[in-house]
Image 1: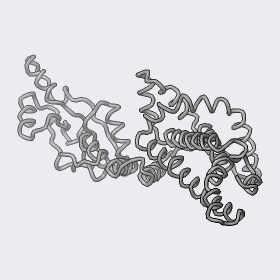
Image 2: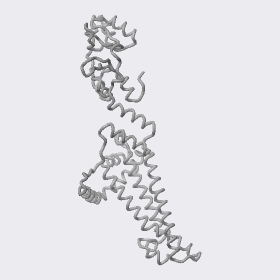
Image 3: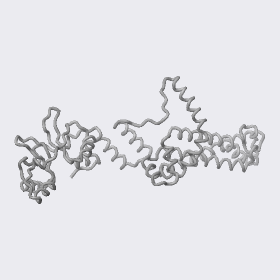
Image 4: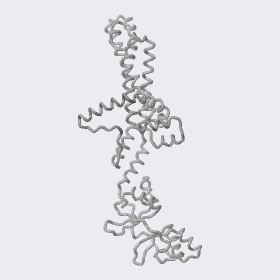
Length: 355
């Protein structure tokens, strides 16, 4: 090692020795890769999958789930680890690699100062490439390819590390929050979650851009989110096309209308034509086998009513809550516009055209 290298500052190969310094370099690259993979796995892992794995008592699932629940602290710990490893590479690895190259330039008769400058420049390039490829890009790709699996593998060790440095992280977080408050910015300790459909759409778009979801998943999610606020007007079956039976219709007449129109459920209308209930053919057939003289009005159950501006998602929820398959749709002034079916609504939510 040349004198200029010894005075280059830092803990170089002179202090450690060449081979120990190279061993430290490998350890720092592995450490950096560990923190990068843990960070991306925690961000990309889906909580519901981790909850399912934890319920199955998969090894590491409990630690991974706990990490996702305090994501802000985990990200701070990962950034601290990445920073320390990066600094270590600059302090130890660059001088070590430069030390290996110095004899080559001495052998060709290059002046010591110039040889060391060139060796140090080459060492810098080598360390940056190793750091980017092995310490950043490769672990990031690994974590994104299978975030839940990576989280299960790394979470126990990563959680142990964060427990050790937690006091330091909290102190640093306090300082950063104080600086933000001086700038009149309200600090947030946890990631905010989108509360509306527009926020979710932006999240889905960003997830596709980062490669966390594929194009097919993006299209399905985007189509579903569009129905969150879209009114159900386009799915209404007009009043003229509604199949109904009079309230005084008996089982035979109801069954005949059901066969003719291919409907299992029929709306029931009163004498003035008002639709007030729905009757299922199964209930009609049961009453017929029991020699019952029940009419459609007596067999009918109340039908759910919705307004035309009801969002599709809310209409689906209302029908599922009532365990109903049909709902009448009225205009703002109370005029009957038609009906909607649960199958059509679900087909719209899933991006498929209802049959």
